[in-house]
Amino acid sequence: MTVIRQQDFIDSIEDSLQFISYYHPLDYVKAVEAAYNREESQAAKDAMAQILINSRMSAEGKRPLCQDTGIVTCFVKVGMGVTWDKTDMTVQQMVDEGTRRAYLNPDNPLRASIVADPAGARINTKDNTPSVVHIDMVPGEKVEVMIAAKGGGSENKSKMVMLNPSDNIADWVVKTLPTMGAGWCPPGMLGIGIGGTAEKAAVLAKESLMDPVDIQELIARGPETTDEKLRVEIFERVNQLGIGAQGLGGLTTVVDVKIMSLPTHAASKPVAMIPNCAATRHAHFHLDGSGPAELTPPKLEDWPEVTWEVGENTRRVNLNDVTKEDIQDWKVGETVLLSGKMLTGRDAAHKRIQTMLDNGEGLPEGVDLTNRFIYYVGPVDAVGDEVVGPAGPTTATRMDKFTDMMLEKTGLIGMIGKAERGPATVKSIAKHQSVYLMAVGGAAYLVSKAIKKSRVVAFEDLGMEAIYEFDVEDMPVTVAVDSTGANAHETGPAIWKAKIEDLDNALSK
Image 1: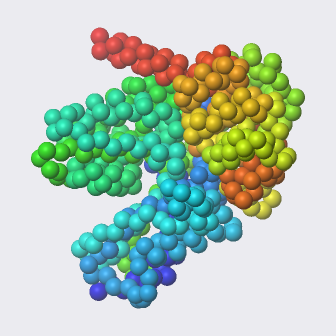
Image 2: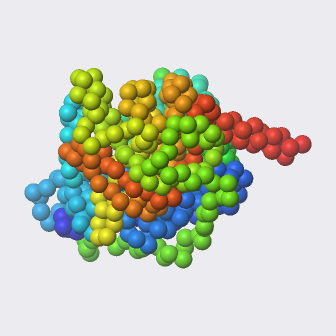
Image 3: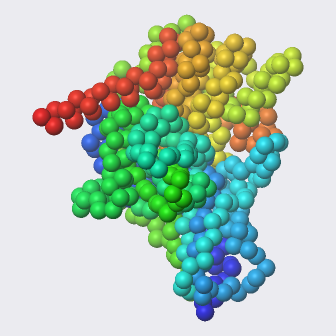
């Protein structure tokens, strides 16, 4: 019998969550580097450059890769020959204690994103607990742990279907993926669970994402099993869609496809698809009674030397004096460097503003959105001499339901977020002759370096969802929807899908 100390388990959970908050798995870094080197779309190449630069900066600074430090998902496989030195805590409680300590670490505090009463008040639990824990009893005398921090942007794009037994899984994936938009921050990975029951397929999909990137090795040796053949087919067909990095159009949408499957009922074919975003964060360790897990930091020289420079035609904008007339000649796809003051606000702040306006109260004291830009962000708390912690964009589509109201009633002229906007929102942007700018999801630490001052101006009780005023200098963004309604997330993928088809046709001749 192996005796595992509770403290070793808790320490290992805490250490692993801190570790994955700032260290990308190197297999993912190398996969993105390879995609960057072969990418022909300049917009996608620029986005991947920022992701790789952000990854190295986070490793150097030991600060989070993304402002969304995720919901903790932990797979714990306990050997039948294992006993614990104490029996006063369950495995769930031990994972939660390690999570609590990791997220409240004063040297690298991680953003607490978990809310209780999800169908009602949605009150933040303040320490990112509880975690989602899956426990299996397995043969042996060790404890195996696979742990991940899953961001909401990619988790929200999960899809599940009950196919007919004769239906084609790859066809469903290829049809479904474009409907997911770019809020899951490609290039990433797809985890696919097949079989079992509905809930088991979803767990299989999530667990599959714990495996390392190895699709190129699989292609080189040749797929043998049904699942391997399906992995390769889906990988190739998805990348032919031309969605590209950040949904801007390009050659690489996914760097790997993972599949786990189980036997299922003869009448059923449950399939779940869960994407991993550009902040692919997971760790894998074993405990054998000899002490806590030892996680070996990667070497900084293992990161590629990637640089990103703005082009000669980049537009520089002073946010302090920009007007609606000024933004009319901004064109979709254009790179803009923002300097000056902007306000922030995301889900909870928008909902509260709407309630205040509906009640005739007006905007909160200190908030004036006339000729202003609002940045959809919930930053990590600052440490040391930082102005703000990692502060990358959140998924803009969640604010679509509020956009027409904001443009109609507040004087707002522009928004900054990640991924696409919905069709109704694009029409509203054109109607109000405003603009939507896209910052790169997965480059939160890099973006935070452009923020020179930060202060809370309203809704302080909302924590990371409060309204801040940021003073930025040369913050890089892309015009995703211009004042005419031209939309980069429609034109980019369409152009690159056609280019990829032409290339494939040329190669087949």
